[in-house]
Image 1 (cartoon, rainbow, N blue to C red):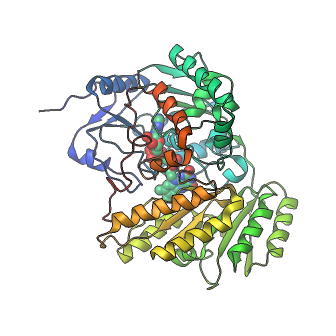
Image 2: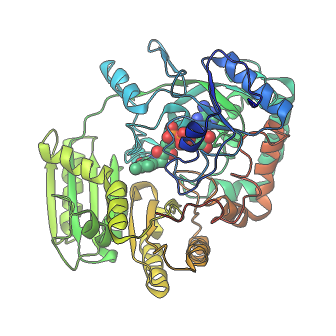
Image 3: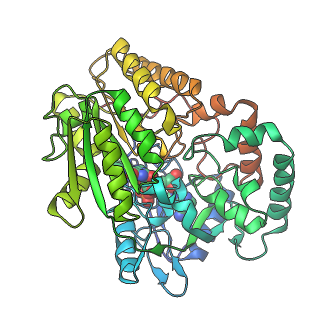
Length: 500
Ligand SMILES: Cc1cc2nc3c(=O)[nH]c(=O)nc-3n(C[C@H](O)[C@H](O)[C@H](O)COP(=O)(O)OP(=O)(O)OC[C@H]3O[C@@H](n4cnc5c(N)ncnc54)[C@H](O)[C@@H]3O)c2cc1C
């Protein structure tokens, strides 16, 4: 018998092939959904939510499916925005787009208007705006320009109750009153403010500091939606204010003999507010073997890739700092040169190349501690402690990331043929959490929360985790939206694909 399904203008799929396809995203998790619905418009989303409420089915939003934390898959209805809700509705005077617009297509359109959105994940050819907002996307240039949150002016979203909310207009009463109540409590709770506002700049979980940053309930709601991994509402319209294009002046690749030298250079370079600072450790360089990014210097600790875009003078100052930091090699990469395209392409391809390397060995590189956020000043001790931990646990590890704003992707490799693999994965993530906790860092960074790390959010925040619960209860009291991805998550190895 045909299963019950929502009646919408768009498409609803219940066939095995589609359900299997949507049982995975770019994360290490696999969960088969009951159905996949592709809404054609806002009213379709309202109908899908009504069906979900009546039938007790959960909703998981999906835009590009490039998420790495296991928050883009779920057992109920996958709401897939890419096929039909993928229009850029307006470019002037304000940019208005639907969640299914592929980021790269969006960037091309706004470039024609002389504008840029600097928060560009390496997955830009397949991720889409809904997921970019859902995770609060970053890119190398977040170092200078911030995450996508800095460019969101307002949103439209559908609540779990089915209300259509435009954050520029008056919010539904319950939502507005609830937000103001939480705000009042937060503003008078010094201890919690200190904790939330001193986390690393890209620490994930709900954007609680929005309560002190904004007064207007609509603005608070919009910025809480950013990074909420589809657990607070379903975004149907995104309004952004990109900035005028700023061309890079110069990129440098500097290869350093020790971690300490990298740390010194990083601290001094960050004072110049470069557009981007990327770290790539020696193990990663050895695995990816790019033409420019490789391990031709055998005994180095790693490389920094630094881009300046303010002025020639800024680039010159940066070059001087890099030279004074005594690298083994410093490669200046001029703007608009083939080397510039190549070096950033090699940076973008690190993850696919590491995955290909692991596959050849029969290993896996699950997304477990790939989303570390720290204060950049703690770079040296954190990387040193992580490397020591992996040596002790005997795991090959590659560490790279947007260190300019404290983001590190740590990718230990595992042999799935070993019986005790789930224990190993659990040990690695638990002990990494302990290291990060010592330095005020977090396992929930740029790719935000989800099945692989939300469990540590509660440990990190302690009693303050109740703020997150209050926000969730206000927006989605029946827990229809993406359950088990932020609260009450299962052990991180549950539903993890360990076959490679
Ligand atoms: C090779 C590679 C490189 C990457 N590099 C980066 C990087 O540099 N920076 C970075 O930030 N990330 C990076 N990522 C992670 C990922 O690409 C980003 O998190 C991206 O923003 C996710 O967008 P998406 O459209 O693919 O989202 P999806 O995977 O579809 O969804 C992500 C989350 O957003 C929610 N969501 C999606 N649509 C909506 C909606 N309409 N309403 C509400 N919630 C919604 C989903 O439920 C899910 O929880 C990388 C991933 C890969 C595979």
